[in-house]
Length: 155
Image (cartoon, rainbow, N blue to C red):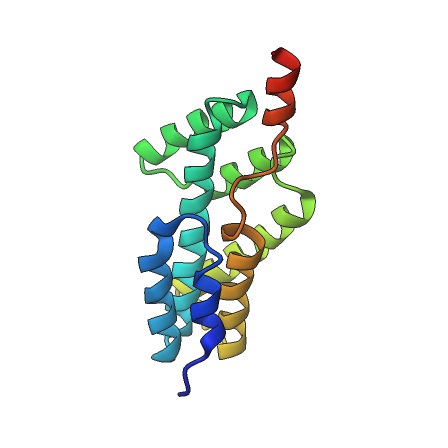
């Protein structure tokens, strides 16, 4: 299979450089025709990125602090937290409704890829998820927030 340069170019858009090894592995999986693995790694990178962005925001945004605290408890107890994370981000307007819907689509495809479901994703499906996760989420330095405005008002 020919190498697709836009995969490598997309990596340059990722703000959290700690995610690059996972994303490179997703690319390797794609080229090995392991599309389910590509989808799983892409979604997991998205969740890791969201948790890290919340960790950074928690010191300047009360909603982010509350959400981070809630999901940290679930993470520590090894309880599924992905739905809670997305629902709370949307409720706090840190995530737009559209981002929440896209997250649900990615999560659904991740679940179908990770569990016995008979799901056979195409190369195009894996490519779409990989690039959209980067374009929509990982290329942004932070989540939507009014932290700067809140800081100006409090000052």
